[in-house]
Length: 353
Image (tube, rainbow, N blue to C red; front, side, top):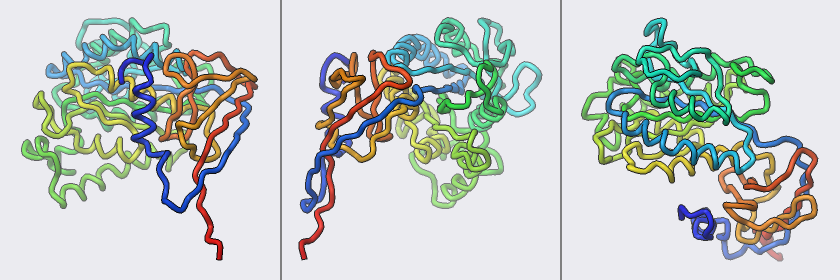
């Protein structure tokens, strides 16, 4: 499944996504979509990094696999930038401002991160240093929800050619990496106790309070107050009965699920699969080519500018069921390219009488 040169993942995805399934009464119909690419896949990716001592190994794992993340995004034609922020509490001090991005290499734990701006794909060395040492000092409480929200709001309004602003046509993706439950839910709002943070599920009353506490964050990332704040949230956090005594990611988990993001295990010894899954999700969400109907995925055939393109995770096209969109990997195309897609789809068989 990890080996991009094999067909295994394509077959597994087609089976598990269920596009070949339909009620017995449906019938297959041939479909053909023609698209002219009007924009290229573009994403601004915000990393919210827990820098507590218990996260040292996980931060190093992120650094070790940063090249994989960057290479995958670049090979898929994704125009992306990354911002790395912290999990510090509000008014933590001058060196730690919620939602501020890191842009310089420093080993000083109290370093403020330098100029507040996005990093380019060519600045992977700075990205690695910022993951190892996020801006400011978090101070033993992890406020991932507030920092994710502030990271979006601080970098508005959207503007082109502005390194400190979200871009007008970019999809926004947030990746929260932590082994703690949100500090925002541990006070009077929800009063998460040690028994709650190790439990797989909360009591019904606390689950209700949790949904209420998350409503403002959910509204923000759904773009309700302002369409420019819309974002997908992914979480690498503590899962149920994890192997490293991480707190269960109550709050983060529900937010990611509501917003269509991925949830990965922070205790994994190897984060490659999770990072690939997240970057593929980001590519799919920012892909410019959404199909008119849901295809039977295994039947897809694609041509770009008159040249047939095979389905491949190394050089070709792939299908993202969650977005009903195609993505291209190591295929040259640009604005104005014509894409023709043929496939079979299920249609409801109307009764004869």
